Length: 211
Image 1 (spheres, rainbow, N blue to C red):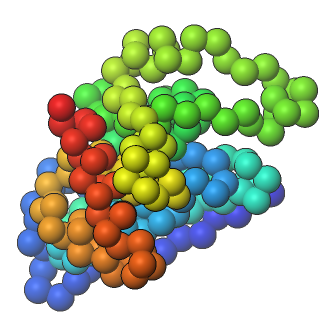
Image 2 (image 1 turned 135 degrees about the horizontal axis):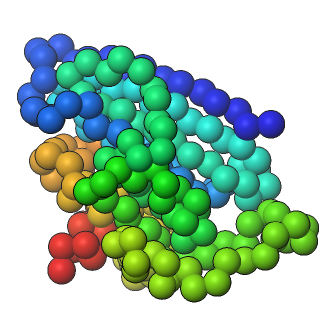
């Protein structure tokens, strides 16, 4: 059964230092072990440090067996609820291409969809219940997704497990927080020996969608 946990990061002292046009909803989707939870934590830390109200809901599902995992982060001056209905996400970050197709219904009109260029065979396909979808890249291109070789970038910077931080870098380009605030959160959250590699991964993720 899916396991849902929610966290309220509250509001930092001193009030909001970043102005948002209403409450923003960011949906992170992937499969177990891809680091969606850490990515959500980094986003929540940055937003809370900027004085915004932050609420996070994590749905772990069959995360230990490669099942779908999603994290909803809502930020604003005052977040009233954790509702994330179809068509309400300002930004969706998909850590895997099939999950991107599943989550596309949540992207609002004019919203952003960032996708890691990787396909992982889902559990239903492995057990023969479903078949892999065809034309994945064509479908993603049709809906305007920004597809990033996050795994390849992570390997290039010498930290294959930093795919999630590459995607955080891409995400950061769609939000009004300073680069230094993201870098500070990374320094505080990742293991000390991986800080430099993760900072490089973050920077390369920004570059990948800014080119």
